[in-house]
Length: 70
Image (cartoon, rainbow, N blue to C red; front, side):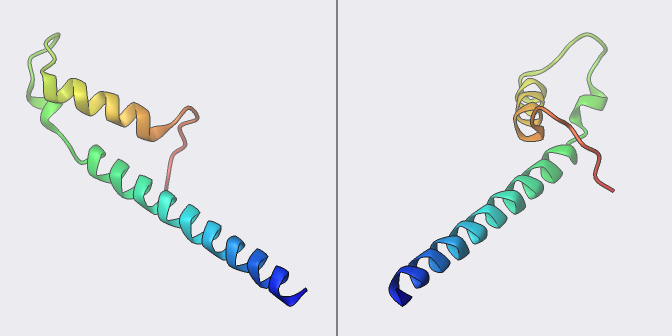
């Protein structure tokens, strides 16, 4: 029984660490993406390829339900 409990605890610890690493990675990636200000210098109506790529990545990383972080 101790071997089974040990396995379950190890799996839960691994899953928690993996979840935390994923959340941290997404947080850092979104922070880096939001520090891009190249779109401010573009003329109105024109969008360059880097800005289109940036916008697509921000939409992917921000998810469906956007929440404000304080």
